[in-house]
Image (tube, rainbow, N blue to C red; front, side, top):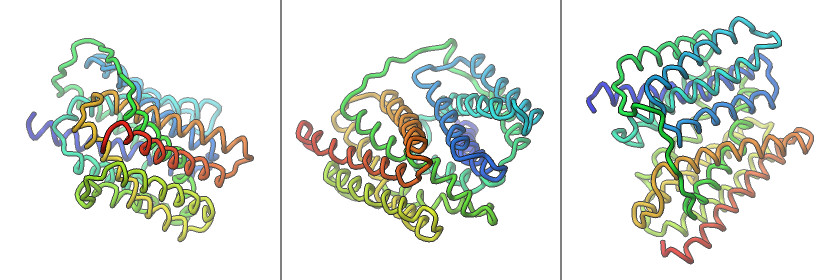
Length: 334
């Protein structure tokens, strides 16, 4: 692939980060409830799951993109009416499926660090989100498709295989997404008078996470992973205790970036032992996202809209990931 293809992937990564976070901050600004904002996040994650294990043809992806354009347009037409929120949910699902299907075509050539930097740029710009901008991005996807030479001629379904390593991927991402969209709502709410800083506040938790493969130098993967997830469990509880105090809430959130980056250890382990393929790990990751979101939403509703209960659930999942790694290393010496 040439420079055009790599540049397209980076731009798609930026758009993905922008759409995922932007709609949530925007939702807070127009008065959507916590439950509605989290549902927007869940629909986006379901959309990301669809292209793995299903690989769409160029025509199939074009239909997804056209559906995204239509649903965003209908969201504009029905703004604040009875049909507005259902149309918005559908637009989230179809937009995520479109961008993920396109990104999947270019994925193998792109360094992970640069991909994360592009997503972080999208996060920073996310407060600029509005429906007309979303519509413009959806139209851009269709234009990009016209210039893309697709290597999948027909719809293909890949088989995934769940291994112990996939279980670890699942638990790590379930922990993170258990509180992620609640955190975004809280950032949007606490910074509602300075909403242009919402993206920057969120990126505080991504800085060292993105640099983790560069600055963490260790061969004791299991020990470091387990210890980091036990610490993350405590940090999650701290976030729950200070959920309404902006400074301490963001302080604990920024602390997560020092330890959550240990997820890259699982890639190192897989490179060494060849336990599972990339598609299976990616599938486990996105299923973990959805499970964490749905579980936390159920906990939030069951415990009478308690953010602290959500953070405690995240703490439990993080500790479970640390304990599971401890049992995993008994079988695989890492």
